[in-house]
Length: 207
Image 1 (tube, one colour):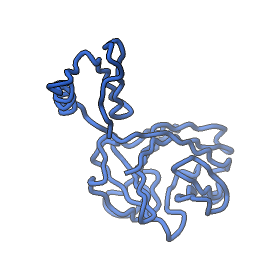
Image 2 (cartoon, rainbow, N blue to C red):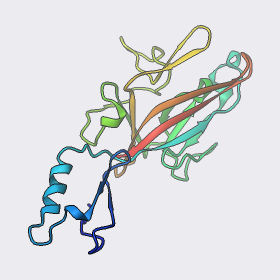
Image 3 (cartoon, one colour):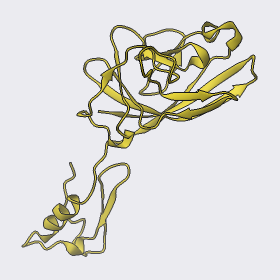
C-alpha cells in the first residue's frame, strides 16, 4: 500500500505511484492542498478507475534432446522450479514440477508435496486466488492425448510440426502454502525429425 505525501514545498517535484506492473500514475504535488487534503481525494478517485493486477514474471524450460521414434522416455525427466526457472534431473531444490514424455512437454507435480490444477476459461491476466480450478487428472501436455470425452492440454499439435498454445489455459501448482499460476507464452522446437528438443516459456505469478 502506498503512502502519499508531497515531496517538497516548492511544488516542482513529481511523485510516482506504481499500482501494478502495467499501471503507473504520476501525480504532481500541485494537486495537494495541505488544509483540505484535496490530494488524497484525487488519489481515491484515480484508484477507482485503475485495475490493480498481480506482478508476473517469465521463466524458460530447456527440454532434453531425444528421438521421438524411440518413445517419450527418450527425453528423460526434467524437474523444474516455476519460481526462478532452475531445472535439473533430480527433484528437490524447491522444484515443484516435472516435465517428461515427448519433448518434455507433459507437466505433473514433482512429488506428493505438490498439487497441480488448471483452468481453461479465464485469461492469465485475470486469474486470482478466487479463480475456480480443477485438479489435473493426468500429466498436462498435448491436448487430445489424455483420457475422457474431452482431453485437456496446454498446447495442440498438428501434422507438419505446427504447435499452437491453447488460449486461456492456466495451470496452478501449490505446496499447500504458496500457489503459483503459470501459462505458456512461447514454444520453440530445435533439431530434426529424429533428434529434437522443445523450449518453453511461461508467465508466472504468485496468488
